[in-house]
Length: 86
Image (cartoon, rainbow, N blue to C red; front, side, top):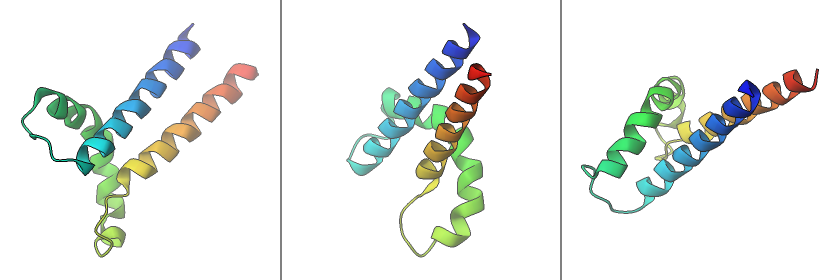
């Protein structure tokens, strides 16, 4: 039960991160409640990642922190699957 809940939460969070990335590509009002929600929910995990990789990505002009976060969430999901099997 707890395993399924954790996997569900991770899956929903992945969708929220993807939604934030998509929203960053289009012109939207940053004060819109949905945009604020996406920012408030994802920024606590994206900010520390961004602070670590920022020196490397400064010259690239793109934010790679969502990609790093999605990879990390995938690793966490695989670890949970491995724990659930044993």
